[in-house]
Image 1 (cartoon, rainbow, N blue to C red):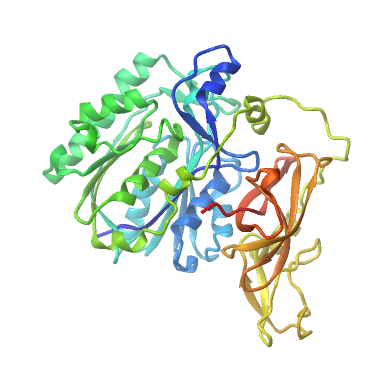
Image 2: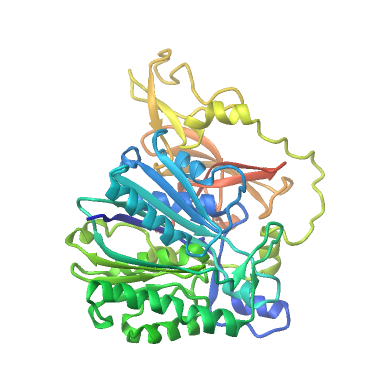
Length: 478
C-alpha cells in the first residue's frame, strides 16, 4: 500500500502582526500574525526549503518524480518543478509536473503520486506545495493570507503513514479566482463562498471517505483540513462531526492561509505528534474537495528530526514595518538605483552550469581530499587543486547540505536591495571549501565573524522576465 515515507515543511522567518496591517489603514487588525516570505523568496524557493527538510538523511537520487503544487508560480511558461528538482539534486531522468490554478492542487498532486506509485511507473514521488498569494491592500485577504510550504515523499515499503482510501468531488465552484493579469486574489461575497461551498462540499467528501472505510469521526486521532479563517475552520470541524481536540491546529493565527500548501502543512503538523496506529483525516478545498484517510505506522518514530512545523514556528522575527512588506512585494514604486540596471543572466550560461550551480556542487581532490568551490563567469569547475596542485583529479562534492562559518563579511548600503544593507559574506564550510555568498534573513547587528550559517536557495534578482536563482547563506537558529 502506498503511503508517506517522509515529510518536511518551511515557514518564512518573518512574521507580520495583523495589528500592524490594520493600523496602517486605520482599521482594527485581526488576531495573530502571518508568515511573510522575504523579498528573495517565492513558491520555488519555499518548495526547495521544504524539500530539503523532507529529504534529510535520504539520497535525492532515489526520488523518481517531483510534483509541485502552487497557485502563485513565478513562471507561467517554464516548468517551475524542474527548477525545484534541480536545486534538490534529483536525477535528470526524474519526471516533473506543475499542479496549479487551484487551492486543491496539493492533494491533487498527492493522489497523482499515489496513482503513479500503484501503477509501478515510479517507486517514490516527492510532492511539494507552496504559495505566496496577495490580497488587496486594506482587505480581509491581505490580513488572512500567509506564506509557507510543505513537502511529502510518497512510496511503498517503510511508510510512516499508509493512505488507506481517498474520495474526490470536483465542482466548478468559483469562490476565489485570479485572472491572467490580476495581481490580487478576487473573492465572491462571503455567504456564497463559505456558506454554500466551504461548509458543505468538504464535509460531503469527508463523510463519503469515512463511509467508504466504515469509519466514524470518533475513529480519528486528528482531522486536518483547509480553512480560510480560524472561525470558519472551527465551524467546518463541527459540521464534520469532530470534537475540538480532534481538530489539528489550523496555523491560521500563526502562519496564515497558505493556499494550496495549507492542507499539507496542517498534515505535517499532525504527523509530528502522531503515534503509531493513529488515523488521520486529510481534507482539501478548492474547485471541489479531496478527502484521504491515513493510518500512522511504527516508522513514524524514525523521522522525528525534521524541522517540520513546530521548529519553524519557533524560529521567527517580528516584522513591525508594514512599508517594508509593501516594498518586498513590489507594491510601491521606489526611486531607481543610481547604478546601471542588472544585466539579464545568459540562458546558455545558466544551462552550461546548471548541473553544478543549481544544486551547489564543487569538487573534491581525489589525491588529497580537499574540497573546493570555485565560481566565476566562465566556469564553476576548477582545474587545479589549491592544496596539492594536482590537475584534473577531482570528483563532485556537494556544498548545499553543509554548514559553514562566516570568515568575513561586509554591509553594502549602496547596492540596490529590497532589504538594505546587502550583506556579503565569505563562508568556510565544515569539512573544507570556501565561497562568497549573500546573507539572507539576518539582522545586520547580529552578523559577526565566526557565526554559524547554513545554505538556502533564494532568488538573486528578477529582470527581463527572468528569475535568477542561486544559493545564499543564513544564520543557523537552532
